[in-house]
Amino acid sequence: MLYRILYRMKVTAIIADNLVKSVKEYTRSSTVTEAITIALKDWIDLYNIRELNKHIEKNPISINSGKIIRKINRSL
Image (cartoon, rainbow, N blue to C red; front, top):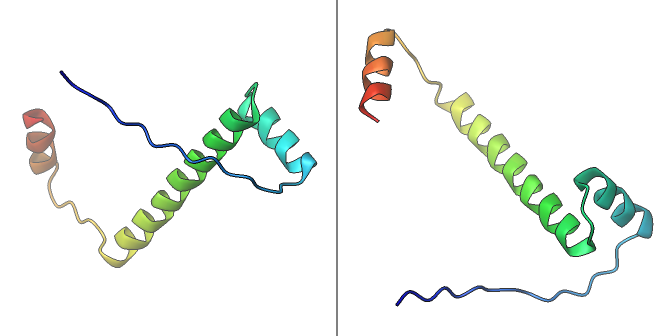
């Protein structure tokens, strides 16, 4: 039998009403919890994209032949 453990954190935060209202509108969420969860996940995704872009900027990918990439893609 498989058990899944979900971790949740109950947080009390003082956030400006207009900010919460805007987040609810932009995320089209019906609850504050859902809106903040979506906003935080989006922020983390954007952060990870920025970090990846920094990494790629330091270590650019060089493709000399499309054959190698096609072979890799077809093997997946």
